Length: 172
Image (tube, rainbow, N blue to C red; front, side, top):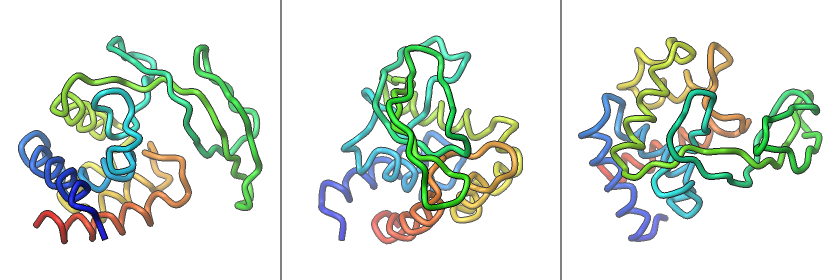
């Protein structure tokens, strides 16, 4: 059961997503909840989606300790990003990393939503984009192994689908 503060957060994101994006607002809201831990672990001022810096970003960034899953035990990063620790997962061929990563920092929620939309329009998500109005199918497509994959967590899709249901109950 969500707290009143959590419901307010969800409703705020939902309304902003309806205005600022062409993506199902329940998808955007569920992803903001998951990535930010109900706003408790957001990155910087307004990075609610865990959007990493990438190679072309020239805006503000923040270095954050985070966790990721990869299929190799020897993944490296360019400084100041760095690996803190690596552990083998129970799932064959998966490794759990604790890493410092650079994340984009946004001044406003609108800036964050625009960048989130731009990211999901990239060619790596071309198989997903046509389904952007269907929250569940869009979530499945960004988590499949075709093109880009939004998150490294093996549990990401299950969590997204559960949150989409919760968001509908809170916001529609």
